[in-house]
Image (cartoon, rainbow, N blue to C red; front, side, top):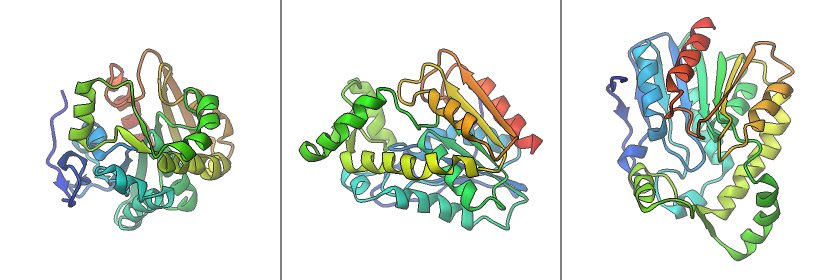
Length: 265
C-alpha cells in the first residue's frame, strides 16, 4: 500500500476535481514530470506520483489542454496545445533542478519523447509506459477515420459498463471522443513521433503490456528498434496486463524498474 502524499492542486474552473493538475514538491534535486494520456487526466498517475515523492523526488503532473472537462472543450484543443501544456511545465522548471525526467503514460510518452528531442540538454531521461504508435485494429481505424470525420462528430467507447462510464465522468476522462481530436492524435504520431524517434539521445526506459487492448505492444518494440541515437535504452514487455500499466498486477515491478532507472542516471 502506497501512502498518499500531500498534493498541491491547481483549481481549474469547469474541470472535474480529480482531473486538476498537481505537484508534490519538497525541495528535492530531481523533478519527474508525469504526462497523462489522450483523453486521460492526472488522476491516472496519482499512485505513481505518491511513490516517486516517497522516494525523494519532486513531482509535477500537468493537465493537457482541453482535457478533464467537456467534449466541446476537448474538441477545441489540438495536439499543438497538448504539447505546449507539457512544454510550459518543463520550461518553468528548467534551472531549478539538477535532473528532470519525463514519465509518459500512453500518449503522454509521445509528447515526452518529442520534448526530449527539442530540449535534449535539459531532459535527463524518458520513461515510456504503454506508448501508442500502432493501435489495436490499426488498419481498420486508419481506413474508417476519414469516413467518420464526414459522418460523425464523436466516437463513443461502446464497450464500457455503466459503472465504468460513471468512473470516467468522476475522473474527468472522456467517453465520447471528438473525431477531430482522434485525427490530431494520429497526426502527432505520424508527423512527430515516427519522424523524431531517431533523434532521441537521452536514456530511455520502455515498458508495455503484451495484452494491451488499446496500444499494440509492437509500438514499444518499434520504438526500441528505431532509437538509434541512444545506447542507453531498456525494454520490458510484460505478460497478462492491460493498457494501464500503472494500476495492475505488475505495479511493483514497474515501479521498481522506474526507480532503478531514475537513480542510475
